[in-house]
Length: 625
Image (cartoon, rainbow, N blue to C red; front, side):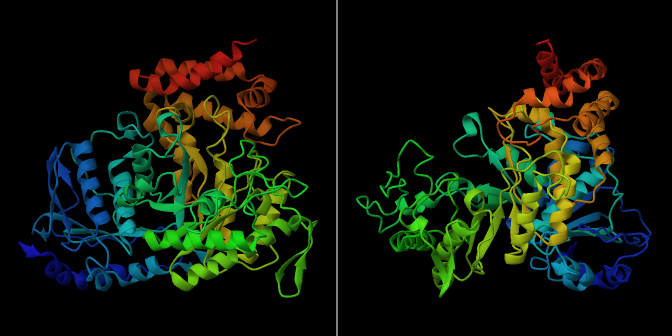
């Protein structure tokens, strides 16, 4: 047996020969995109070490450094788990490497310092997060083969984990499409697993890739479901929307599976009420009516007590004390101060007066940027206090409703922005110049990128009153959105969706393809969507694949050809709008029902249950005639 480090050092010259083939630059065969894949020729070995298993028996070992991070250890466990699922073989995890056996090394330069010497160009490429006007995520990975050793590594532990998941997909044909593994962990039995894709590296153009999972049923309170989040992590997503005073108790779990808790929420009133200097007798914190009479903070009419009084110095000091107190008692690198989920904000007499946001510089109440300038001036002063005591902490906030218009003031350096285009029209991309509903949103985004480019976008891809009956074919729209976000250097994605759990599993029954495609495009916006749909149908629908591909083709055809006087998607449009506009008015209901029946008849019992909710939704709606 050889110690891990000794064997790695012995492989140095061979590895350098391999990495010298890969400069990380664009070649004629590989076009540089947001996610770059560069393949190099593997070194020929006198013996074949390409098999992980043979006839259900392990022929490889997984090697993990004694200094491995917990995510690297989890990556090794996940590789063991999926190898056993696919082949039936149990592969051992060891801290040493054996001769004449394929060793699969998982690590980072921190846990295995020699990686920096073995693969310097990969490490440089993985740690280059800005280049030629483009930005990249820090959790990319590289997979390299040298003689009898396969290296799966990243510059970060999350990167090494992404490499393992990508390796499982590419070499074992595994897909993760539903939270329930019995229904959503897809693979074909493979007693002999051969390494076929083994010399490449990838990174995403987005640092943050996640979901805000709005829970239903038993998950409503925490907006969380461990099985859904595990599936997210396996699909190389790396963040989960995490709200103060909601699911803080789950943040350590998110981190343990490679999801960074993304601290954000509508919480201005929370900060006032939890402040160490909060005075319950004081009314200056709250909104007023048009005559200046304060509303109680706990009024049942949310349209009145919508925000807080961020014109007030007293409110500012109260929120500042609350934020600093939270940071003093919680170990976190992010905090959120987000506007409440309402469009109304009256604080008389302040809100009828010009506001001085800098010395001698005023914004008038009628200006589109009036409220946002008041709010972001308020937030900047909190951010200054945070930066002084906690220089490594970032404040996340919304550009939403009242404050979606960029302010006249600059944002503090430690403030990161989440744009939530609640009025977006899903019928075409966010930057479509022909879509009158999206043109104003695109204009706002273009303005914001000049103010602050650390921007994450909160789209509504998984949120609609119709999703438990009708799947909106928004795949190409998502792709074009991501291409635009990449082109302007936005930092990430945090759309709204739902958990795949009790109370909302019907949404996933209908929309499994859309949710899976989001994960794929979030990692690489340049993926071939049509090829992904075929791959999904082949795995998820089996013998009914061809019929379901036709179903998705019909969905896309109806979506592109349907017309309506009201073509603005919003939360209130239920399945009636979609079925009528994109199916019934085009006289396509017979085509949909026929192809779904054909798919159902071609399916085995397991697949029948995947098709049944879609089939019954169409049959129930069009039985109304």
